[in-house]
Length: 133
Ligand SMILES: Nc1ncnc2c1ncn2[C@@H]1O[C@H](COP(=O)(O)OP(=O)(O)O)[C@@H](O)[C@H]1O
Ligand SMILES: [Mg+2]
Image 1 (cartoon, rainbow, N blue to C red):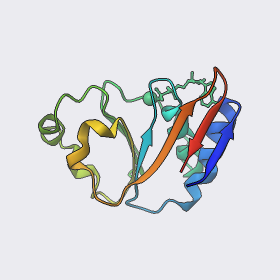
Image 2: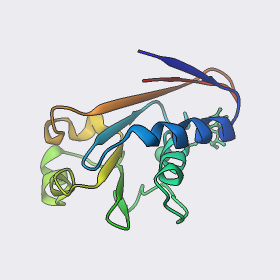
Image 3: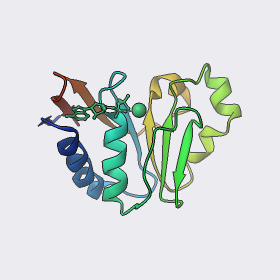
């Protein structure tokens, strides 16, 4: 495991932009951390690193936002059951060949493929975060 200390939102996004270089089509990345830790900021940086120009926003209401067949960004906070996730068709995205970023993956645990990557972000103070991969 390696840890990066971030002192700002911009540093977190820049770290994620660089992290994106090692991602390959079909990779599933679990973004872990509490509410407000910076999971969506990580997703924004990763999208930038993948050359996606669109503004990445939290898909809390849509569950998943897709960017040009390259990236799917999930927020499973409001998923109430794995059955619901299955019926929403979330499972199919993981075999689409795009990179998948998943916030609140604990809510869809049984649907996840076996070889997910994990990025964990923890709040240290208002502006500081610890990112572990
Ligand atoms: N070092 C940091 N890294 C990431 N976000 C930070 C940092 N410092 C402050 N923030 C703020 O924390 C919030 C993180 O929000 P967000 O990414 O939506 O969290 P999550 O998706 O984990 O709920 C943003 O308002 C961001 O500006
Ligand atoms: Mg979020």
